[in-house]
Image 1 (cartoon, rainbow, N blue to C red):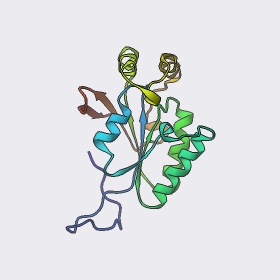
Image 2 (tube, one colour):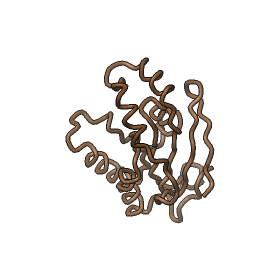
Image 3 (spheres, rainbow, N blue to C red):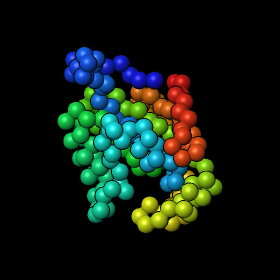
Image 4 (cartoon, rainbow, N blue to C red):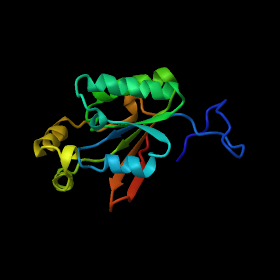
Length: 171
């Protein structure tokens, strides 16, 4: 389901209106398929903001917020690709979306520790996280809801590589 274009959105080639700028927040355990989902669904249209892409981890959250703010100010949609396990952590990005007048959409990957551990075991380099990180994220995970300020919350089931089932959650 696509949101309606914003009034005054610039016409796209062919005369149709460009889709509105949005802020997307991915929520799920390490190894849940969030980055693969970004590549599959958003890579061509959204700026990728991820803690994994920041070399110097000092002030990583602030750097991500700054990058997201810059993209939204430039009229570009953003995907925040972190575990984002807590409502408090997601609130910073929701406040930014509200400040910029951008709809905020959450894509939630319901936790499956066994599957995340299995996927993580096949990762190499910086993509591989210590298994304890998956357990810690699970303990901190707070299921997202529209009450936090999201315009929409969708549930994503990662199936085979590149295949995702997305269902919008009512209310």
